[in-house]
Image 1 (cartoon, helix red, strand yellow):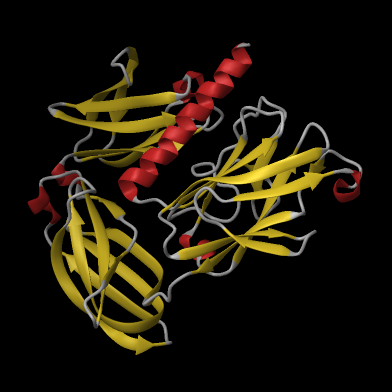
Image 2 (cartoon, helix red, strand yellow):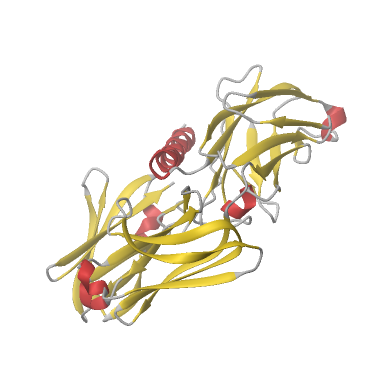
Length: 362
């Protein structure tokens, strides 16, 4: 019974995290439900697009929560690992990428695949492909696909991992194919670099910065290459980071076409000059209990500091002293292995400076 409660709580935390991402950051999210005629709780598989994810297994973006109702629905990573939460790079969902599905059922009979959620995928069309029936169905919110499993189409076992797959195809032509975008510290300035593989009527890039990752302001422009099939490399220097008076700065590119339409790039975070103060980042920000958590701490001064951990309700879960060197250092959080699923805050205070990192345990 405790295992079931833990699994249910785990699912709630995972789904709430994904829903928050989809709602706040416009994260592309697809949720498929597997239902049987005699099952009340469906098995679920979630696939979303996330900058930094790969088609393989990523500790920070993928997860395998338990199933307690006899049904299993998962997607397969590039190396064949089953995951029920699968983060994919944007390039994978706009280039005819195929993702295989794994289905496990307790008995033969009729089943249904249901699109429980489909959000923010306007740039890509998603098809469910049934290799056995040679059928291809365009997915939309609420769409259903009925099928039957028996000894003939499962090879005598109660599972199948080869019949179904998802195919992602670009729904709109991309004006610019962005292949890289980085932000690095260069002395007291931030150096932004990006490259493109092709451009179509690209007028210019507008560089934007933010202190909270939500509200951005324009810094300047870099002219685009118009229409070109060649690779192009660009850069922009944001001088005097001290003017922000912040520990970290967020950057993004706004690519503007000749007709005035624009597309936003992924956001990059730059830890500012150590003279600015104190910066703390948790790696990974979300993960399962089996994943190790560490802090990247950047400070201007060598000296003692305090680390304090609280849960979402403000309960103190412990504290300890740190001896931080100037510059960037790594602080392990072995206590994270004992945390139940939920939201946690890790605070580091050095003198009058204080920074808090958020950690979600799935």
